Length: 383
Image 1 (cartoon, one colour):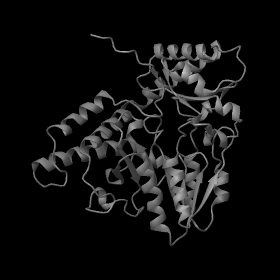
Image 2 (cartoon, helix red, strand yellow):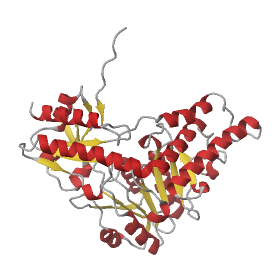
Image 3 (tube, helix red, strand yellow):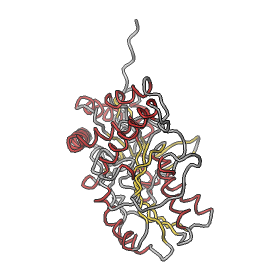
Image 4 (cartoon, one colour):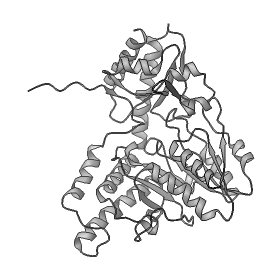
């Protein structure tokens, strides 16, 4: 019997999370005994419908909304597409202007670009050096044609938490729909939709220990969207297609776990991130050019984006490949280098972007893993 190769320390939780054991347990019955169609009236269908209804309540409890305000989707990308296109189609007679930012995920910027090709106008707001949108800039961008503001809750690369409450208050004052992409924040920090004052909020299951391929869109009661999928009347008539019961049950269980342990998890995530940062600062004290790109006082508790000037992140990651899994702030394609649009928008110099690492901790991260990651990075820097 051969020994399994030791896997590297996983610190890329912002990319995806493993499925939690409790989530897997919630899904298993739906992959075996509970096989009915949730739309069927007989006992098999009612069993499946009960699982879907339970999950809808669990997601709603995490967001502090009504179950009927939750629509299940295939993930964060679909949720963003439905929110933005749904408002655009429904309100185009009222105006064709959308406000977003330069640091959004492609699941937002690509949708906005598509709408521009159809005659909509989009304002892409800048951010400051900490990666934050200024509500005053949002207010200045609003016109009588504005129908939607879409600003992410927390950035996937730097963890910067945007001032959504202030921006949503502006939107509400002007009768503008407010959407936030909360794929990265859900399960890490509070995402109470009534406190945030948003009309639409997107969730991606695989960012909070549920499977890939499942998500949800919160739609505030009274806000109407065009259908995303046409067919039968599933998901309140907005998204046709027989529900993926197992995936939905998994998302529900993940949201229930997040709601029960939110503060405990937040403290653990931050303790692991801070241990990593403290270790690097101590071990690399003599190395010039260590730059922290994450605004630590206004960021997700698990996210650390840092640059090591003079060392390309891609090279450093290659040296650490057997010990550590994380992400870089730039991507190399053949002879071209694609710089992070987020770090570029923050005004960070190209050498620092090329040296940028995104390290994100998770609920399963241990002190031993953090210490091993610090040692691996330090070895790579001093290589």
